[in-house]
Amino acid sequence: MQPAELAVTLRRRTPWEATDLGLAMLQRWWRPVYAAHALILVPVALVLVTLGWALDAVWAAMLAFWWLEPLYDRVVLHVLSRAVFGEVATPRSVLASWRDWTGGMFGALTWDRIDFARSFNLPVRQLEGSRGRAARERRRVLGRRVRGQAVWLTVVWLHFELVLLWSASAMTELLLPAQLERTPGADEPFLGGLFEMLRTISPSDALVYAAVILFLEPFYVAAGFGLYLNRRTLLEGWDIEVALRRIAERHAAALLFAFLCLIPLFSNFAVAQEKNPKKEIAEVLKAREFGYYRDSAHWEPRDPSKPSESKGLDLSFLQAIGYALSKVAEVVLWSAAAAALAYALWWLARRLPQAYEPKAEAYRPPDALFGMELAPDRLPADVAAAAAALAREGKLREALSLLYRGALSELVHKRGVQLLASHTEGEAVRLAGMPYFALLVDAWRRCAYARRFPSASEIESLVSDYRGAFVMRSTPA
View (cartoon, rainbow, N blue to C red):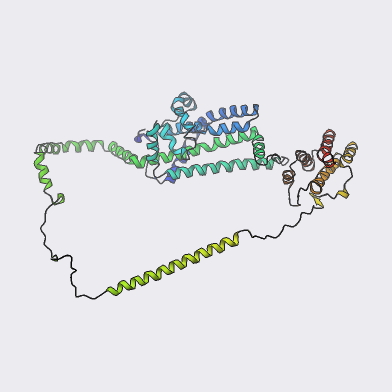
């Protein structure tokens, strides 16, 4: 890397100006950067998503795609580093020089993967080729004053990534209003729900994530590369070197003439060097700066053990005043500390739970939930039989509604599930903790909100399962 060959203007910049320099470089060479980036990222994303879809583990494919981000970063840095020095790489040349940007991938995917200053430290390993202890020392020297900005760059980039992902998810919700709410499992509220969330990740979600990385990753790498160039400019004086080279190129003839004129001076200097070095050193050491001796005289008492008598004022009373003030200050400080401690105890006592809290009001089952009457006297004696009769008459919506009302009535009046009017249907599923109730709510929402009416066979299955879930359990053994 020769500073004189840089295609950007070097000057001393603040760290945030350096990140702007990286973004300006990406704006200038975005075509080759994104072409090479997509050439590597798109095939990897398609292969991983296809494997995840075939193995029913799309979440694992997304995790592997995220873990391989250093590979895509190296492609971006490879193109930018050569464009900065006047060589614009094409996708074909990037593939042909794959050994230049794949070296050290093991370290990049292991201990360097969780480095929060990854975009700033990447050029040390990829462009300088440093390894082991030398690389650590080099990163420490370069990041002495800018590592904080490099870490914040990673934090900001992660927030942009999350914003884009959330925006894509919100757009999906707007375009697909009939999409159903995903509810976690009932047996394991946290682990089951987490597993259910991972299992419901679709290939389209993985492709959206790949598109976000394809768009954002070059910005992250370019900003880190701008920080790296600015830090080397400050430490190694690249801007001064480039300026001197340009001056030399501009005034080469004048400098040659001045050199020829100074040749006699150099010859006189060579003659002067023929003097005796020891004598010259001795003459230099005679200077006052290298130490000297001086005679001085002053008065001292004959008997140092006896204090000298002074005829000045007696100021011993000042010592007594100082002692009294110190005692007063000590009392004031202890009083302030006691008052602060008492206030802290009073503040904590007000916020601690009281020993005798008022008893919570007993739960009263609501008369209606979600616009449905739940009183047992308003329901048939045999809900399952009545629903089956409605289904045979072709009244599938009414049959499903009756099953839903019967299930809610069973939960609040017989099972003791404390459902309130403020609860949503998803919260009711979680509080019930019954797989059958989750299936029933799912069918009702499709029918009520998406106008997707259940089939007669589905109603028969729900009626049969209703007897198993409620009627059989309610009958005494």
